[in-house]
Length: 376
Image (cartoon, rainbow, N blue to C red; front, side):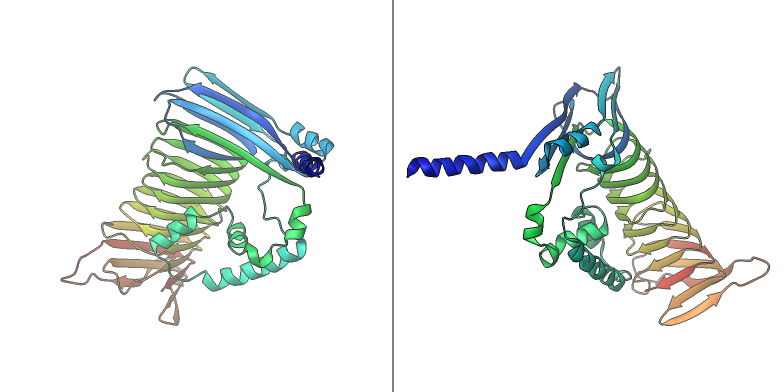
């Protein structure tokens, strides 16, 4: 009887191993120092960045294929193109994957379940879009985000939509690309369709130019950062310096920001709390500013076709001056239009003075043309 049982166990182990295979794509390390720069040229890849403590940069890239026929697996591997090298003080990573290889992993649901989940998500999003949230709540939202808001929603509610029988039969690829590097390294990024997650605080300068990128950060601390992002999403728990140019980025979420300039176009931006020396210039975006830090002094926003949402205005002791042209103010359930002048002269829409004998935060100055201001 025992030999029979052992035979069954052996067959099960062979079946499982044949249904799941792992391929090592890249495994390499380089010695680095404070003068070393990481240069990334990326196309269709997802990478997680973590901190190393041995003065080396480590590249580890592998794929696990589940229930994939050998021919299809080989076809996918042919679409992987990865090169890395070190020359002087420059470490270069060049990734040019096929579109299918680099696609983000979507929740594994049947089409019927996915339709139900998407419908439920849009109802949830519409209901919660204008609701006030704290800085800590937005930071947690960023911290536990899986990528897009839809993916995060499905993951958090997967028990409602998952079908175990369906999932067990599906082919799947688990892609793991981890780069471990010291936090003193500067990084320069040029990326297309890249999903980049940074699991350590960025202390040194980053230059990023991305198209349809998905970028997620903890703290971004350098004053010299320059980001230019077109499409995709951008999330950071904290920003403490730099210039950020975002176009068609959705969502853009920042837990806390100070000493930074943001240039927006057709985005949806949420900021949990604003600190010192922050300014925003915008065209045709939806902006949600939930809180202002007790040490903030002055905040400026200039917007054209902007929908600006400000929260707890009455309860917070800051002064505010709002000027507009062809702009609508929604406050206390009343909608009022201002500044429809042929002379294109700005009109003072709203003024809020500081309260005497109470801790004073600072001043908000807003100029809105053809915009909407919602006072919550």
